[in-house]
Structures are given as structure tokens and as C-alpha cells.
Length: 234
Image 1 (cartoon, rainbow, N blue to C red):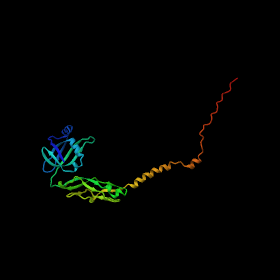
Image 2: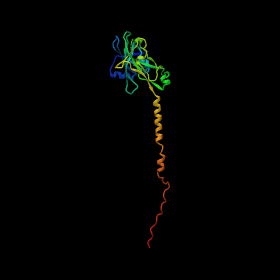
Image 3: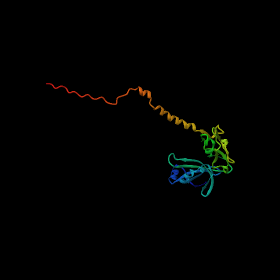
Image 4: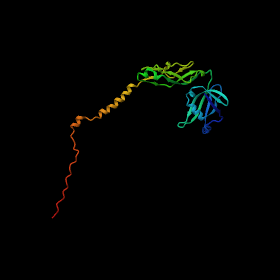
């Protein structure tokens, strides 16, 4: 992917605010043999580029004043509630230096697996991206994960996913072989709400014996007695 950027000489909070008002986003390019370079990019073009998955996990060709740089997106600072990019960081790429990157996983075939197709289960995607170590030329845009072999009670670990040539998956923490996809039963959970819905209907039926013992109440009101007038004095 190609990115067009422009050099900027001024920095600071006030200058960055003025850039954003004019529809530009401040940024920086660092790493490699060159010195860090202050840049600015068109905000709308950058906003649409950030929506593409490849922009986050691919090597980008950045044009700065007619000179092309191979860079990686490293950090994006967003406004807390506005649709506004505050700042963006890029790192230069050396063809001989290995990269530590996060690569998205693309899952397929789960609807064709025995677990989903005939065993009343669903495939729960525990993670959506993994950390890899590779040379820039071997960096994949994404890694395919085939779920067509999943069965009830099984799970897919990191070691079960074939890596592209030159790419090594790395982990952090104690778990060296984390679960990527787990198989979850759903048939039992669907029957439980139906049984719970039927229970209130049984409890709501009146008891026939208690109704028979209860005395019947008259629906007619007693007739009012006529008022008597006092006798007249003679």
C-alpha cells in the first residue's frame, strides 16, 4: 500500500492543533539508519486507510517529498469521542532485520466441520490475531486457519496452525501453546429456556380442590330498607 506524507518543520501542541484544523494529521517516522522525521498526512485519506486490515499488518510504501520509505504502522492516537486522528507513528523497515508484528487470523470452514454441522456445537474464536517474528519480505497480510476438521470436545491450539514460510509464531507469558479456537456445545442451553418457560404456566393454574371448599359469595347486593319518618307532634 502506498502512503503520501509531507515534511513538517514545526512541532508542539499549538502547531498540531492548527494542522488538525486544516484537515492534516501530525505524525513521525523513526527507526532504521535515518533520523526521526516529522510528517503530516491528509486526515481523510488516513482515516479510510485505517479501516483496511492490510494497513495495520503490511509494509507500506511512504512517499515523502519524492523519496520512498518502507514503513510499518506502529501507533495511532485517537480522540476520546470525536472521529479524529490526533497523531500517528511509523517505523522504517530494514530488509535484513526481523520484525515483531501482530498478524490477523482469517477463519474458514467452521460451518463444514462435524462439530458445527452435525454435533450441535459452535466454534468459539478465542483470539483473532497472533504475534509473529519474520523478515519484512516474509510478513503475511493475514494467516489462514482451517476449521473444517473440528469435532465435539476438541480445540485448536497455536501449534496446530501451519505458519507461512519464514514466519515464526511467538507467545508471551507462561502459556507457550495457547488455545486459538474452542468447540462449545449449544444444544443443551437451548432446551433449558424452553423448560423454564413452561414452569410458570403450571404454577399459574388454580387449585380445583381449594376452589370447591371456598364459600360462594353472593353477587347481589341486599335491598336497602326504606327510611322511616318521625311521627308528627300533635
